[in-house]
Image 1 (cartoon, rainbow, N blue to C red):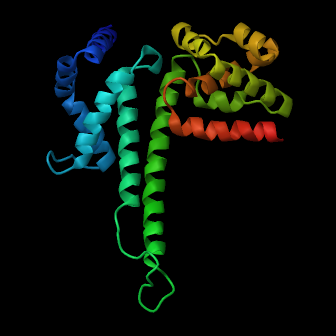
Image 2 (image 1 turned 45 degrees about the vertical axis):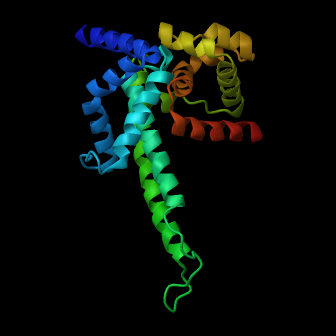
Image 3 (image 1 turned 90 degrees about the vertical axis):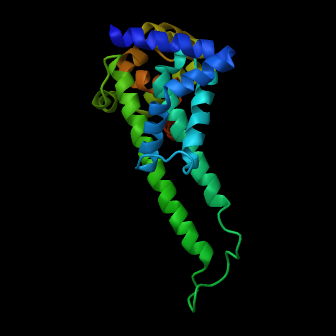
Length: 244
């Protein structure tokens, strides 16, 4: 109960901060330990104020989270954490693009390898590491949210459609939900999959959606709470479904 009360109070403060700059500044000051912790997770060490630009970026991301938050995004701090991580990753990519001003095609020594080759390998390795970490964190957040619907990750794998026709029906229902955000809101509000509306709107058979309820819950959740990486993978998978 205490946790629920604290979350309710926090959301009240976030809503107040949307329209009052002083409230926003105070909220950021009060949650600096949280911002430092999230920045430290990214840096793999405690951030140093005045030295690490990442801390300032994290603070701006927290401020951005205040303005962009709505209850459909889930818990505010989870949303803020994902936004902080996303902005820090964006910063790394930006820095990698503008770090060097020398000739990238200059050969290194007597070898055919150029500076561009070496930097590209370094950038790719770092970016892939950051992407793997971000993906793991998104999966962990998704698993936590699915538990609220009585769905485990293993359930999703077991409940995944095996036939192309069934997979296509689920894709149509997902697309309909994406085009009608009110259905995603209903999922979060009621904790139940809106099967009747999905079936009627997409043309997918109700029995098909009922058989694959747990699979559909996972798909729809990915499109409700800012799972940018998972959503990108899912979009590519669903494109493949229609291409076959």
